[in-house]
Image (cartoon, rainbow, N blue to C red; front, side, top):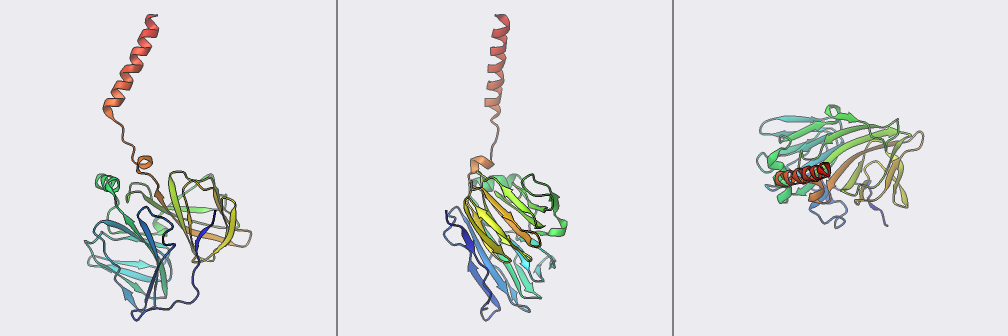
Length: 265
């Protein structure tokens, strides 16, 4: 299969407002998520579009700046994640350095809204990597550091995290239930394999791994693998499994009667 890649452009041509936006891998995923690479020139500000019925998650990977809304100011001095409160609270991104970030815009279907109404992360959501929980996973080498940012059901069917290592990486079986995207950070220079196709990824590159594909992201000695991962559950029924109390009671009764008949025999 062909690899899904969007390489970072070396020359950024800003508009008159010091901003540039372009969609990442348009048409590669048709289940309600669009990603946009956003570049903001130092000294400029940008007010992203607001959505009343879509989740937006901003992935900040390059440059320093800050976000303001009518309630708070949030400093961007490391890898940072921000999700606005739909269209309830307008916000502005301010660039101190030349900045680049990815904006994910996620449609909400009836299943997503059902989960969201039951429980969700408080919005606006702001999380620097230094405040995230580290985790260990068997498919990652001993030199890998990983952080969870968003777990399932915190914001619908999306999840996000960060992975970083030098001379190490991840070799993973395909996720049949989730599609995955990767945003390369830092001084990334590593081998990226999906199925039987291999290439190199570098800082700023963006990639997509369809559900079920075996994949690896591994750096050789002296090189870095550093990326944000973003996942979306492919099918609602794999994500939202609710027990039916009536069916559970019937199953318990059925097993009890089977056991009783065996005892009587």
